[in-house]
Length: 395
Image (tube, rainbow, N blue to C red; front, side, top):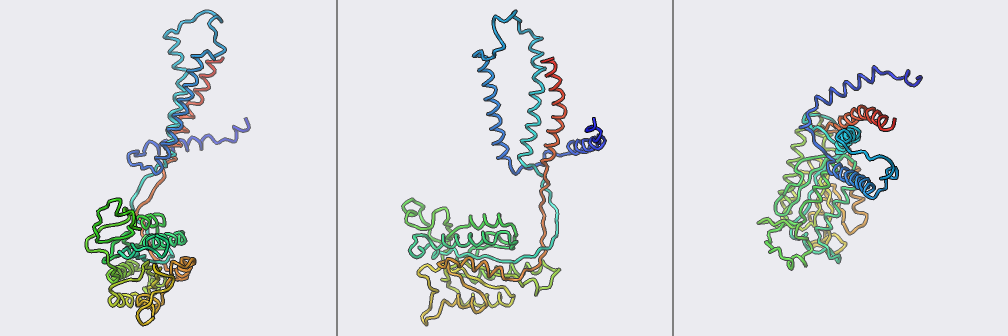
């Protein structure tokens, strides 16, 4: 009795009333489920267990395992309609347990309402555009590995993203051959989504219309599903891609009206994953100058397919593109160096963070608690009825 005296039944009544009102006013047609597959698997497993239980009971009765039942133990009682009705009434509480069980399965499916509205927040981040070379030269074999330059490039890029996970980088991603192609057109902060987009992007975009037969692709280092045929592609022209990147950066500056331009450009960079074999260096040089004026730091992850050294021109100097990156305060990281990606990560991490405005438009409001409440309400009703039925069965 002392335990009951500490209970505030009025508060419990109010909680139940509010919960019921919330449940009644719910528009279940608007629900979405993020874990529907998990709930389905759990449901199937429970259904199988119930079937096994029923089969066990029926088998026991058929084989006469019920030791309290004997043919010669007493007078024969016919199974009249009254008997069957009584059995049905007695089994109702057990059947009613299916409702809270179903409600729990819906809760496991992680229901939510998707609401669209704007929420402006300010975060400290570093802003980066990743550009990956997908020209025909990326289909060449990398040194003595038997793998394509493209595969080495993708592996290095994904490893870099794994290291940057949780750093709240704002990133965009384009691939380029003769022309640029967007994979993630504008900046996002979602690490998981960005990683998947990078993973799914083509390894090579070329103009060679291969017949797609097994014989053709058995010897080609780029897998058929990773090759994208586009007429007029296959070369390596970087200038147009850099111009697109500059436009994205400039557009972002205009969006960030609340902060001075100088602070905004403090943590911006561009990461280019390429074998540096470009055909438009004179135009590209102008674009690097434009990046430098905007205080955008260039970095190159260099896919050095022939040897471990930086490529040199006829005069013995390194590739003009790589030299231009160094002149603009950038860095070059060769994938043949085991620690190159670590150093690339550290260089990006050295950049000063910028404070930017982010507009979030989509919200998920969890609704699993509605189904938990429904399960509790049903159990509150079913358990006392079940106890009463048990008293009737075994007075």
